[in-house]
Amino acid sequence: MAKTKSIHGEWSSRFAYILAATGSAVGLGNIWKFPYITGENGGGAFVLVYLGCVLAIGIPIMIAETLMGRRGRQSPINTLRDLSAEAGVSPHWQYLGWMGVVAGVLILSYYSVIAGWAIAYVFKAFFGGFSADAAIVKSSFDNLVASPGQLIFWHSVFMVATISVVMRGVKGGLEKAVLLLMPALLALLFLLVAYAMTTGEYYFQGLSFLFSPDFSEIDSDAVLTAMGHAFFTLGLGMGAIMVYGSYMPKGISIVKTSLYIAGADTIVALLAGIAIFPLVFANGLEPGSGPGLIFQTLPIAFGNMTGGWLFGVLFFVLLVFAALTSSISLVEPIVAWLVENKGVSRAKASVISGGAIWALGVSVALSFNSWSDVKIFDKTIFNFLDYLTANLMLPIGGFCIAVFAGWLMHQKDVRNELNLPDQQYEIWKFLVSYIAPAAVFIVFLHVLGLF
Ligand code: TRP
Image (cartoon, rainbow, N blue to C red; front, side, top):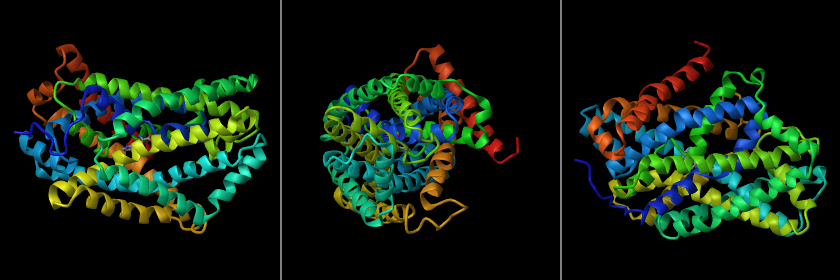
């Protein structure tokens, strides 16, 4: 019953799909967010919980979300409507698609502000703003964040860039850009790790912070953050990978590609952590200093290196591109829906959604300065949106996706999409039907203090 071809076109090959989906997964989540939340949550134990969540919850749900997309061949909202008809369940499941659209809009509104910081750092690096002195680096960051005008300006630049790519369709130049930029980003991360090694004892202190778990450091909220981050970093739970799956030709192995993507994503995050924590300790900084962590540490490394300004420019350019290939996947569900249901052109759909996200993003930019006193549930607008989306909406979305693929879809349809040997199918089926939903459920009960 589901369509076999997407009206939006298809990826040109398996490799093209892997590149695009890796582009969606690897982004600020790996390089900006992973280190700072690891620092805030005490290190090793948090990292271990995060890795466990990627394996036991993230990968099985990634497979589920992708297969639903490929079977439905449309925007997540319409895919869920058709798949629920196919499975003979309530059409209300399409509200899961709606929740995803809302989550994507909310995430991008703050994602774009942080990506704006990274653009500002390209220029800082170029004009010699990086220094070997940690105090200078910190005050330079504080000045940026204190300026509403600068934050709104750079956020606007990033949103315009996102919209102009999305307008042209997610295929186009994206595949080629990712092919070139991902390896380059990886190379620069290795350079930063090599620099971190020169800090001697601090290098080992950084490694031990990241990899020797002390479970007394984490509480139920830290576990929730680790689990939420597994969704965030893989780009799961809101329909992004579902939309990408809907452009995936039949015959490509969903399981293999998911494993590659999750593997690449995890490696980038761990490298970022290994590069950053030695610098934190070597310069007497606080691991838990929050969202500014990479902006207060990496410039010190570049400030110390010969030719550091050039590597600094390159690094932040690549970070902005990594953010761009992620932000595209955050708007794609709403754009695809507008095109399918409202009959508007892709260009118009991109501008409408981008404009709304931009406006919301302005309030996020202000929440770092003029509006820092505005609190929602005791959190700044930035912290509130981050908590609401990464810790609540994505795990809830992921839970529903697991239930839908594991319990509601006809198993012959699922088997047909996955095309796996029996034993492997059973493993996935067990993880997606029992382990993943139960884990999300238990973590929520814990946070609510009910278990
Ligand atoms: N995964 C990206 C990152 O780590 C962000 C992202 C892209 C995302 N698409 C998503 C997060 C969908 C949640 C849902 O930077």
